Figure 1 (cartoon, protein in one colour):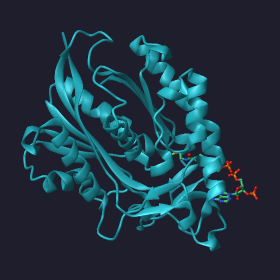
Figure 2 (spheres, protein in one colour):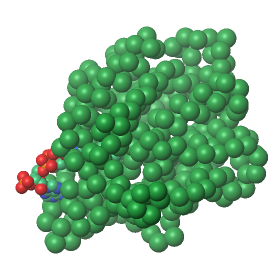
Figure 3 (spheres, rainbow, N blue to C red):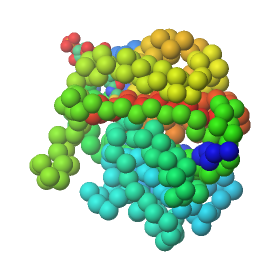
Figure 4 (cartoon, rainbow, N blue to C red):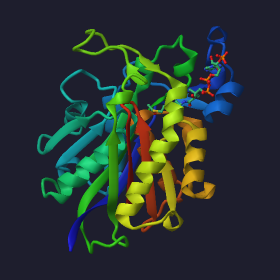
Amino acid sequence: MMIRSIVRGVGSAVPSRIMKNSDFGSELETSDEWIVQRTGIRQRHIAEEGETTASLGEKAARQALDNAGLTPDDIDLIVLATSTPNNTFPATAVDIQNRLGMNHGYAFDIQAVCTGFVYALNTADLHIRGGMAKRALVIGAETFSRILDWSDRTTCVLFGDGAGALVLEAGEGAGLTSDRGILAASLRSDGNHKDKLFVDGGPSSTGTVGHLRMQGREVFKHAVGMITDVVEATFSTAGVTAEELDWFVPHQANKRIIDASARKLGIAAEKTVITVDRHGNTSAASVPLALSVAVADGRIKRGDLVLLEAMGGGFTWGAMLLRW
Ligand code: ACO
């Protein structure tokens, strides 16, 4: 027997304000047609004043707890993936812990940009399997609208705000791929690419928050190869093939990257969950937001084999297989 981290609940939150492609001003010289054709994005949610990574994360966490039939008292670990924290410190996870009325357990942030949620789930899984925690809230929450250069059409049309959360609980498994819970993961990073997608500010360099900068074509060039490599490594660790998958829940950056990755991996389009059209790229929130959509509409069900993957700034990339 072995400990497995099993998903007990899922939740999400998006700001109520929706920005459609047609809402970009004419001075930006973009169009709905260009954005849809190059990215698949039709709209994104944008935080209102006072809406923050912590407030969205709290909302998603409460929904995940309700969905699990649990309360904050039942949780002993919060791991938040974000690149847009409320403050430089303390960790926004601690802010969310406080908002939930929790003063037991421990909470911390993880920074791996768009791969953050996969890193966070993996970290929580290791804490659970190592016996440090029994139940963890794993949250991805972002307000990228606050770090965008709204005069740069090559980046500002791509991103949106939101949050998603899972409750993980320690359970027993037989060590087989038929077990429920997290089965295998593979994480990578390569700082050689750190200048291809970054924020041009920070506490120790400029003393400012800075704005997102990206060489889009360079990111695109590396994305599919990195994603498929890390997925294949995860399949091989778990001893699973693409045909056995029930659902593929990729990071939602660009529909062309998702489609090309799925094609190369031999994953059918009907098994691929797409939410980039409605959320844009919400960085660390995109995978849990997509999961919560596919659970809420009845696609992902108990016992299904689910593949997650993400790639982002750093570069960082990673994949995870779990049985729901
Ligand atoms: N509207 C209209 N035209 C635009 C826009 C826009 N919003 N943005 C760029 N263009 C123009 C460019 O200026 C260029 O014009 P030119 O030919 O006159 O120079 C033309 O469109 C083509 O530009 P490319 O950059 O070659 O366009 P491409 O097809 O590569 O699409 C895009 C750009 C969508 C950014 C693509 O490169 C991409 O998706 N890259 C990956 C980015 C990504 O997904 N990043 C996130 C992953 S990591 C993470 O999630 C944090």
